[in-house]
Image (cartoon, rainbow, N blue to C red; front, side, top):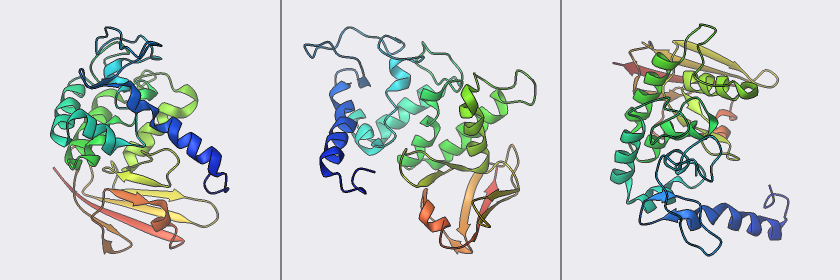
Length: 241
């Protein structure tokens, strides 16, 4: 916003602040950790919630959605990050003081889609469907955490349509897998997005191909601008087990 408004001074300052997570990444442990005023990292365990709100060091380390490639590089590259994610998703709702995933709270919302950024989209598709099938039901107790004014239900809606706004402030979506055979999104005015999940079911979740307005689409990022090119857009996912 600052760049768009010509406020160069504020833009540069805010970009500096946004990069400060790098000063909290401990290369000896591979985690983001709180630091003392003298720059030292206190003794910390991955499951510790000291310095964090309703989450642990292991969970919050991934909360850099605007700079995922840099985070992955600091972890040792895609293979190392993949192993870390595989461990994280061993459990899906482990609570705030754990080395595992905690679907019931916002700090963990963006993590399943990080597989897309390291070239393993099928793992994003698998873990999201596993979360949907095991943690969410139509019972009064069927949500894994507090709704928090709609934050958690909106996570489920995005996961079910197969698109997720992974990067705050960037107009676009990382691609997942639709849960339903047909989804229609009514935007402002008469704009409409139709999402077709060919063969979609709780078990048929792996994306074999995606066509956007009839054209083959191979990227795991879908810019909002591409959906703005026409008043009516169609995403056609071909899915299998």
